[in-house]
Length: 228
Length: 121
Length: 259
Image 1 (tube, each protein chain N blue to C red):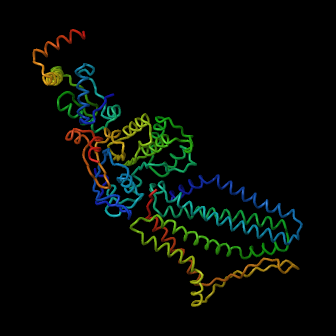
Image 2 (cartoon, rainbow over the protein chains, first blue to last red):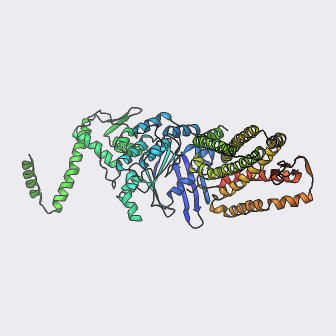
Image 3 (tube, rainbow over the protein chains, first blue to last red):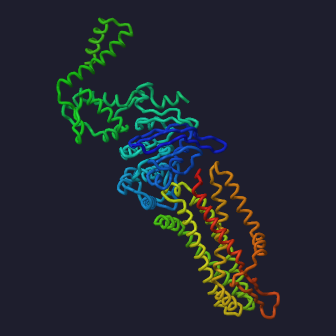
């Protein structure tokens, strides 16, 4: 079931054309690896879908509707930075999310346990890794149809990365779409069943992951390195 | 659990792993395989990939699926014997090809093999 | 509307420490002024005048600080990732800012007026009686006039702050807003004068002048001019406020959070 449709998307900042002629269609149940070097437009793309940026040209349809209040209610966006005010404690953040979104309390508490985080911790006291774990827990505990994860693994030590990947898989379900944008291809390539390469604002590749392995006999990471 | 080679389709590697477990006897006829979800989480792969592996295994007759319950290893002893033979042949094919590439004749290969097996005992 | 209440609630929750400190500072400051002046040897009437002027200065500073803090908050608390990923209509963000600004402004007003009256009553001089009488009679109109003017100025500047976040496609709109706001701020007076010449009708309400001279000393006193309300002025102000609110909401629909 098509949940996200991007048609003819362009993003122009005046000095730079960040996205060019993006045409994509996504269905529920996909885990998509959106790969590209820094500055290729991955974050810009996700922010447009999430509603933080406006398209210069083209259309973004979320469940058939343009970006707006409804799309924001069914999209869970994990940004590349902390978005919560630092006066909050962890328990404040989830109460906040619960007040505005459909939220799964139990799932959140489970994730907190899994990441060994305590509710009473103040955001000011969290390390970068812990903050990422918190933001991920909040994002995954939202009952959303689309999950947009922007660089969920960067700046994280390997053992935590493993935990994060496990939690992403645990929370996957067939009624949601997950788009993971990262430059750490080798960490994500086994869990993403669809691979999209974004290079200098354009789609360079959009293919089923296993098909790429079958046809090109190469890992996604190697393929990317060879192309760019 | 499995160290995946990312250059080969993952679903093939999963199938291979399960076939080996069956041949080794670790998975016996009638044993239930983990659910798609469980295996995906254990191996850290996409559930659709596990799904495809299970589908192919069923197509090859190595497993069968009971709807709503799960996938099970076939109880057909003949099938398992066939699988053992096929896997052995695959290994032998690679072995013989490599030995012949090195220039050994068939008689050399047999002699070297016997000698090796005696030592390693 | 439940969203408006929630979003206001969380911002106030975050500021509650700041509010407490501000309140204590204000009270402390006022009583420090009172204590300091009380110990000087001076005519009580003069003292009450000086204290009133100082409190008036505190009042002005407070209003400016509240305005500046809220303007900065528009940038940091309204136009941020969190606000724009929440499933909220942009008008909710406008309402949030207006409600919080008004709450802060009015709370400050109440506190400072209460403190001022309290101290003036303590002094019990003819000056303090004059001031108290004046405000008792015309306080309501002064309050409305003051509030209206503040709100317009505040949202006018906030339009410029929001316009900064318009995307490349709206760069012309951005410039128009900047120019429009600055022109209005600069030439509001001229515009008023021009309109008054054409339509000199006045409202039947006015605030009389306040003129107080310390008995004996002609140089010491306090006076405020008569304030009259012209119909065109009032209409213009209402129109400007409506336009500003309309633009504020329209801009919120168009802005981007680049971060």
